[in-house]
Image (cartoon, rainbow, N blue to C red; front, side, top):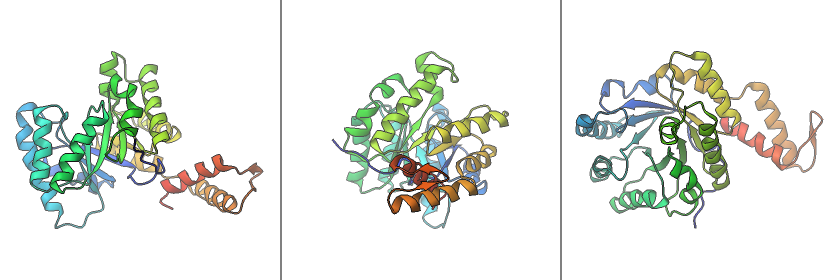
Length: 285
């Protein structure tokens, strides 16, 4: 068994913007709005008849990145690994040696799926951090095995609320979908893998987005995906701790490093110190 021990809030950007792989005009929009990751989508955002064209456009974008100094990382969501389109996605990336920063693998239900893709990349000498999407009941049931039993290190888990709701026959806002996300959060925390929360799909509901971001932060998610550029500012603001919280966390970590002590009358134990370190990690400290 392998584990991926690291802080669940370290190592990944906090905002991931989905962009259809068919529209190269929008490939750099994530950078313009300050998103941490431009997630070029070859799966749900691309019609079956456009898969080949999208694949070629994404490979061209990854090739062009070699000559650019960018702040926004690139991720590619491939098609379902068991599909012909998914296999072609993996081969297009590896055969052209054009890896994104992150490879997002949808509908993961077993560690074997992740290992297979990782083996293809390793054999080709191509390096990309793997992000697994959990968006089915089977994926939730086997999440501990997916994160703990495979050979391939996993950079993050992304929760897919829309497909999860469809698989469960439930509404996205239902308790059962929330319970599925909670299970993913618990297993990911135990494995030391950060969680990227599902997008908020009502792009016209600004207040709803704010509540969704706040819930993601409070629930321990390390990042949140977006489906519209206008959502990035809210996500970034929500995952950026306020100055007073950073000051509190800094003092807590300092006190904890010197042993037992208090901050604002609160006894500082390891649980409090761990929360403080997570806050500082979100702040980039």
